[in-house]
Image 1 (cartoon, rainbow, N blue to C red):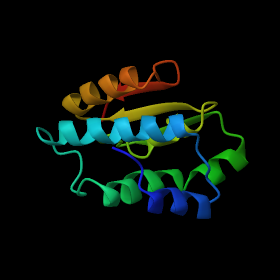
Image 2: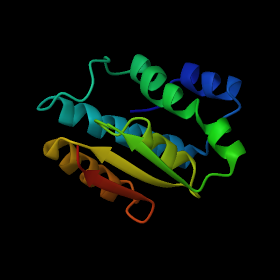
Image 3: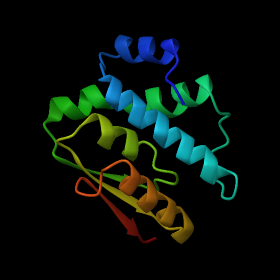
Length: 129
């Protein structure tokens, strides 16, 4: 799923500039999210441009603040389908992200995404309530 120009522009307004490889990885993540959404409740947001804005731009709106703190670790509590944790982990290579989720099936999906996106050394999944 390619990033629409409106999402790239919105990220620019926030001061977030991504490499094309990061945008590609975010697109692959969204594709995985919507494939899995067919069998489990991960998002009610429609695919396409709205998904880029509501999932990627909204998640990455935290990026300037996180970067300003110098944080090297973060936890996404109740991550569901991996939002905002996975987009943040993709955009901030120096950040170690923990994705906390109570539903086992969602954790399986998250593990598949983390592996496919090359994030296993930077993202851990914890299945707890």
